[in-house]
Amino acid sequence: MARKKYNKLVRDLIPQIIEGSGKKCKWHIAQDRAMPGYLGKKLVEEAKEFQKNPSNDELADIMEVIYTIEQTMGLNRYTKMGLKAYNRGTFEKHIVLDWVDDE
Image 1 (cartoon, helix red, strand yellow):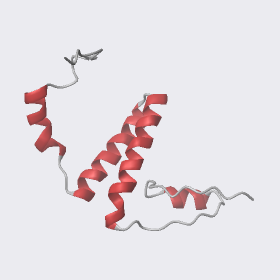
Image 2 (spheres, rainbow, N blue to C red):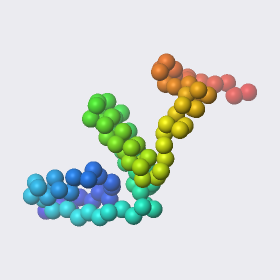
Image 3 (cartoon, rainbow, N blue to C red):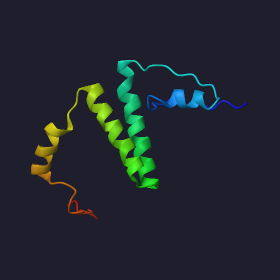
Image 4 (cartoon, rainbow, N blue to C red):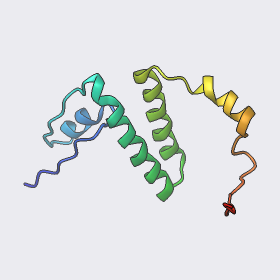
C-alpha cells in the first residue's frame, strides 16, 4: 500500500469522505499563524486548476478560498475593490497589455 503525502489545506469534509471510502488518512487543524501560508498555496493551486478547466466548479473553489482568507485574516475585499475600480478600472473591458516602452 502506497502512502501519498499532501500537507495541504482541504475542504472540511474531505477526511470524512476519504475514511468513508475505506481508506485511512491523517489530518490536523492548522494553527492560526500557519493559515496565511496554507491559504496562499491553496489559492494558487485552485487558480491553476481553473486555468486547466475554466468551470463553475473551479470558480467555486477559488471563491471559497477567498472567502476563507477574508474570514481567517480579517480582510475585506469590498473595502478596496471600489477604490481600485475607481482609480484603476476593472477587468470588464478585457484589455490585455502587450508592451510598454520604458524610456
